[in-house]
Image 1 (cartoon, rainbow, N blue to C red):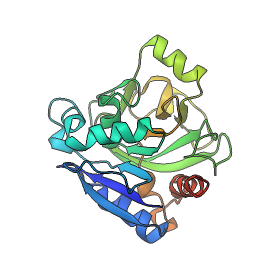
Image 2 (cartoon, rainbow, N blue to C red):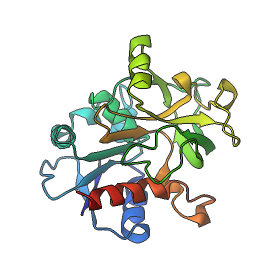
Image 3 (tube, helix red, strand yellow):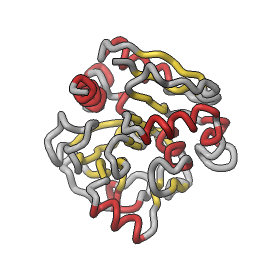
Image 4 (cartoon, rainbow, N blue to C red):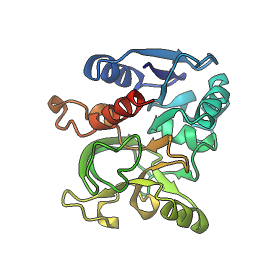
Length: 231
């Protein structure tokens, strides 16, 4: 079992993800420079947060054309596990691995704080260790986290149970009052139809140890490890 953390020019959460896999989860992990294309030795790819290519044009729009992304697409098409966090989520959207698009936050300001999200789907390889409707305390740090998809697309997400996380209150109330960025339907994370690609705006790698005020995010990585053991 081996994890890979993709490093784009401007990535700044790659070391956080690497640390969680190596020192908290205690599994093999390697950095993968964005110009690499050989992923045959890896079982899970992590696209970390940051500001790939300085967020020029749109977030993730330039990184989508990095050489590694064709390999990531092939990797995902084979049913292998991919998780994109924050900027990684934005890149997955731009690459067409997940549906929808990311807009500027509703207040047009960068937001960095802890938020609460509700687990809506526990039937994925990423969330199998949570109970349905479990409330997680996980930080966000983004300027473009306002998820959008058209009416038909939203209907498809709901029909296929692809909405994995929604922003909520500490008591689990899902409403605009507890939506930090204006994301449609309070969406904080989704999976593709196959269920092997997850994109989420909150940072689970920043909430993987109790010393960080919450270890709720750790169980996403632990669930991936458990799923990979069965394959």
